[in-house]
Image 1 (tube, rainbow, N blue to C red):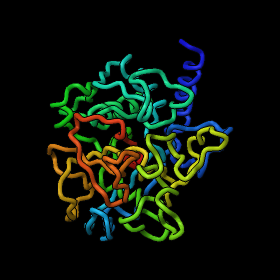
Image 2 (cartoon, rainbow, N blue to C red):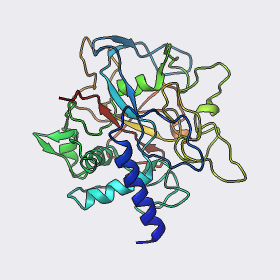
Image 3 (cartoon, helix red, strand yellow):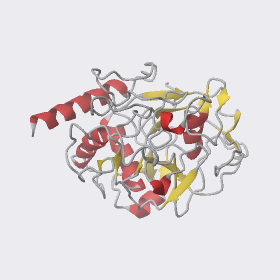
Image 4 (tube, rainbow, N blue to C red):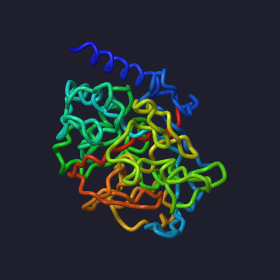
Length: 334
């Protein structure tokens, strides 16, 4: 193995092992250029109770959002979109331990499919993977981290993303401590939550100050012609060198790229975003034809980047503007 690739691999495994269980560790607001970047940095979201109602949507101009009241259970969300670096390490682990992936992924919008991470592209978000790949990868990351996988069917852990029939019917074990895709409700809660309540759904995530523009918080079609390293929105190139991952502007909860960079898969099948009538875990219908995607991207095809904007894609589809980030349920320890 090439020494530089071995170093990247070893570093990523070390970071994953270090960060995965440490939910109490405070989130770094910005990674310095000489600091070690952590691909996994989980941020806690702990509503007072699963039975507290939150007004997730706010009506605004030029947005697809509308008002719905949903219940939110405590959860954790990664501060960053899933990097190709972490994807690659976990995919290789998975393939060596009984996992199958339909698509090997690539570095951002211009990487080489399935190739080892490079110095310039390792921390760009993974793209060219579909929803099934993302779900199976979450199970692999859970096992790699010594956690219980979330996605099962009839009690069997799903390890093959080419088995689309099983994955389309799969269940999520919400009580497992492993990694999973966020529900649409969790995604929007995390995109809009502020210390004072919720920001407007007709703004990009992080636009909590009237002085902030969309370009201050997001890479989108007006300021980028491709993906950028995760967590760099709002930065500028210095001496033609790309900004360091995690050096950009986070939203009010400490999450990066909730608007822009790449569109993000959610767990839910696409349906009307209705009130949940007391359902604790709002997770959408049990079947459908498209999976919800949120946040918009650098691409003009998905240029709507406001917190309330919604997209739906066939779970078999893959694009160079489509990726994901992962969550965990807040499981009580015995």
